[in-house]
Length: 286
Image (cartoon, rainbow, N blue to C red; front, top):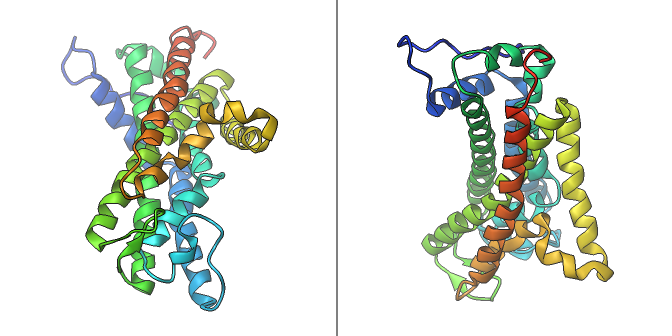
């Protein structure tokens, strides 16, 4: 779908704020098929998982954290889905919009129009980065919520067994699930900024999306090589497992704190590099 330029400000002489650009970017996302492709995957995968497990009641659970508890309580389903999504699904869904949000303007020839409107370049970029981050957060929330509801409808909302072996109430399980999802979001946002960087630098949506996914898979490959164990604590892909520290009794906050600064170590330079490239973009050449 053809992207649109920023609307002219309503008050003459008053420059649009970042919030104005952000709102406009969200409107554009709502009009793009790519947005719903990612959200559709976030909804479909948990439903397929629950349907497959329900169709084979005598089969074993998946070899993932909480996999052996999925038929005991629906609260275990979103936890299994979080572990599964770390392999490739969540980075891919995140990259679908983050990798397209700048490059699509190049593809449609509208970036020149946007950059010559009254909004400052940094405001345009900030609005795009915020929109990509918001999409990642919404997609993750939909992924977890659908898994929780589908699992609960099939297996109930009974107490859940934590990784430490402690059984906690449904209420506490929901709180821990919410906290774990927030911890999971930190590296997801870092992947979103990597996608935005590739989108800005390559000016090609496909290259940015595939590039982000390849970076995620490469990190997983590096983590699997025993000779490179010293790299594992600093790989962004490994931070997608930090949430599991909260699903213990007592909660282990150390992995979450580590994931926070490692995620920032990837996200902030990616954001700064993408902003620098965007600010230096040759308007005359698009």
